[in-house]
Length: 257
Ligand SMILES: [Zn+2]
Ligand SMILES: [Zn+2]
Image (tube, rainbow, N blue to C red):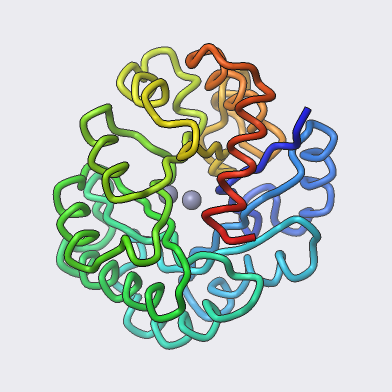
């Protein structure tokens, strides 16, 4: 089978921290060759951690960004983000976005940090990785007014439904599905997975979060993306190999690998 590409995993904290070699070996044994190590900077060290992992491991690329949860500390991280974002291992800026579910930072603070990071991505000519939770309208307004189409990007861990899907697709964005799509109760997410065009489809773990069925409730790891890819294949009446071939190709395209 064509090797899978986990388009979104955190390898610098959680169970993978300090044992990336083993986690990647387990992924490869499961048929997952490529991993995007997503960087969430809370300080200078964490801003660079994913890029360092990508530098030291074959078939791992990285991103760097400030998560909406951490937006209140974003101001001091924007200049360093420009520098880290320019590193060759860093293929996208983010994850960034708006999270009105947890509200760890005020709305306006989140919006400012989001806009600033889209501008950095545009200056660097790199795509964005978007984290969106209960904030669809404001995200659409910002993506449109900041002209995200110039660099493109990924809606990571898609958690809305078909209506929102169509709006993101119209902006030219790629849609990445996580273990949520393996939960039978996630009906609107599963319907969106059916409707996403094959050439915009990505698959991810969001390790260490959101482990797919049959590992639900445990710590997630890139090897488990196979289960999510299988559910996508089942929902769409396509073969696992079709899903693997196309999602791996799409990840290479959007990350410009
Ligand atoms: Zn996220
Ligand atoms: Zn993430």
